[in-house]
Amino acid sequence: MGWAYGPHYSPDGYRVALKILEHVGDAPGTVWDKKEIAVVSTENHQRIWSISEEEFGGQLIGWSPDGNWLYRFADLGDSSVVSRLRIEGGQSQDIVTLPWPRVSYVAMSSNCSSFVSVVGHGQFDIWLVEDFDPDIE
Image 1 (cartoon, helix red, strand yellow):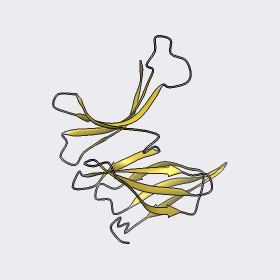
Image 2 (image 1 turned 135 degrees about the vertical axis):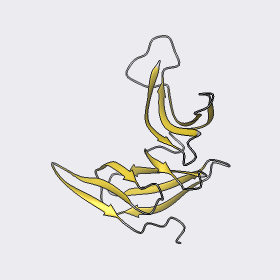
Image 3 (image 1 turned 30 degrees about the vertical axis):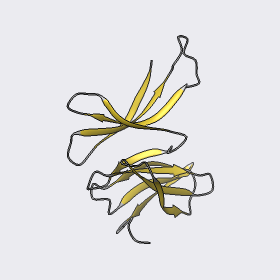
């Protein structure tokens, strides 16, 4: 028993990344036993890769154009961070720390050159970050 949500197709269309929340025992409650980000094959519908949310939590926002990285957005309380995770090897890199908290509903363009987010509490602003290049140090 559980939930799957936030799917993102890989650029080649053969994989889908999504968040999965599962109950392991017989009596599910309000606490999830297992939280992970998984990559599922669109051909045979099997899970081909996963990582626990404790290792790479946050909101999935997309794939790199070459299909080697997954991007996520995490609200850290007083700031927010965009990170990427290499599917092969599993290493994570923080790409940019943003100076605003209370971020939700983040979307990244398919070529990873920009992303947009809703920022605020009560009154909301929409922020568009353009010319975003994760490989600039």
